[in-house]
Amino acid sequence: MTGRITIVLFTTLDGVAQAPGGPEEDPEGGFPYGGWQAPLFDSVVGEQIGAGIADIDALVLGRRTYDIFASYWPNHTEGDGDGMIGRKFDEIPKYVASRTTLDPQWRGTTQLGPDAAAEVAALREKHESIQVIGSVDFVQTLLAAEAYDELALWVYPVVLGQGKKVFPDGATPANLKLLAPPVTGESGAVLLRYAPNGKPTTGDMSEPDRGV
Image (cartoon, rainbow, N blue to C red):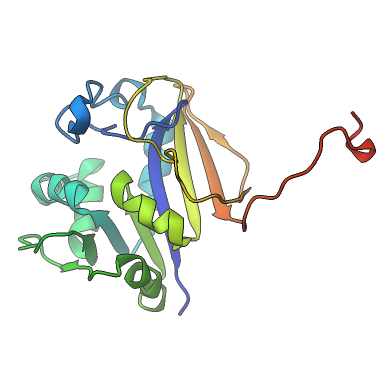
């Protein structure tokens, strides 16, 4: 088996991915815009996210995101919509990156060891479709190690000017390639799907074959 690891992030036009879901999700640094995604959520976004979750057979989370999910999703397993997501999350294995010892109450939870990026990469041998949702702090480790197959970025038409970014200063240089045409929601949110594509190269735009 060679599974796929997909990182799903929600980001602003200026690259901020901190606390899209709610005010208390991640207030670190005094971030005042928790829940910025909610007013821009639309049916296309919901359908795409729901379809992606329906296919996964493992979930990887950072500790903060895990604690949020574990307090919410086990209590929302009935009906459609949230219920479908809650049932899926409840039944599949969940892997958590945490610097402190985890005492999981959510069934199917396993704490990753100190080399979390390598352990996540190795999940391809156990699962067909692994999804990493949010967890912007931990995602930096996966991006730096290229321990992923797809980066699914939902880019929203909002600028916040502060907060944790998908690619902060000091991020590991990388090329990405587009895997599919963008998908656009009614709110103006755009889904961009990328795969790792080696390291950046440089050139000169004034060279004759550039047509400049």
